[in-house]
Length: 275
Ligand code: DGT
Ligand code: MG
Ligand code: MG
Ligand code: MG
Ligand code: MG
Image (tube, rainbow, N blue to C red; front, side, top):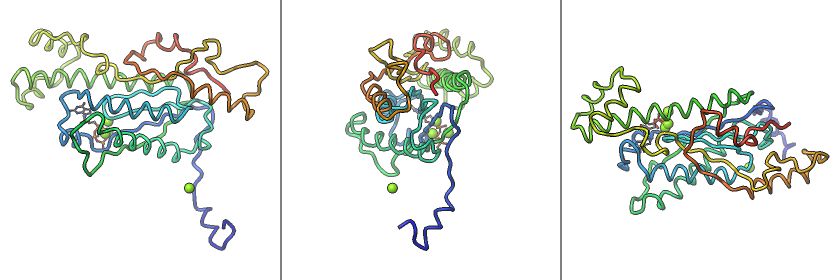
């Protein structure tokens, strides 16, 4: 079929492979979730069912794409980090972004009934956009993840104070907004503590830190995937072995700090560089 007189149209397509030796981050984000959260009456500032659904959908994405070394999520977004040397879809930008976003969307819609029993999902259905970003250095990838986790913290502190002022403090939303204008983190912590007796640091980590999903291995020596020094890492046999090892790995779901070095020092295999 390729050689018909119509075949030439193929040459109009653009090859969009991402550069080698880069971690590929696929970030998905819910479309119009401000509206969707209102429609389904998500709890303010944080809905336990909604975040559990996000995390469950993300876990399936991590399971399905064995080259994902770590995923980080908060609010209506998730970042999936693909191994620096992944060869999935020949590293093609559009294939990676659309495959992750559509799988996530399918899982989110399919699992909705498990997390929102009795609430039928209606059109317009939730959808997620996806984009790929390449990070050439471990330090920059770490900064990317720190950026997302810092964003989670800043938004959550603001939302927690804002909704406490409204729901417990009897302010209107306009009054609460006014009261928080220009306030620093310390001011917000003080409002929570002095006016409402809430210590922000005691709020659940799932809201303060977001969610980290990664693979953990039983065979500690072989966490870097090098079964034997002589084995050719690109041989078919070796690639198949490596895939099986990743499929067997335990999937961890945690709400922990990934800005400081501790998490990474304890799990050096996650971002270990491989050719
Ligand atoms: P977009 O991404 O440009 O299509 O627009 P949105 O509306 O999805 O905005 P975005 O992604 O910047 O922000 C996420 C929205 O979702 C934001 O309005 C807060 C809301 N949201 C996320 N999680 C929760 C929750 O647990 N409870 C409530 N009430 N709202 C939430
Ligand atoms: Mg947005
Ligand atoms: Mg969104
Ligand atoms: Mg968002
Ligand atoms: Mg096809």
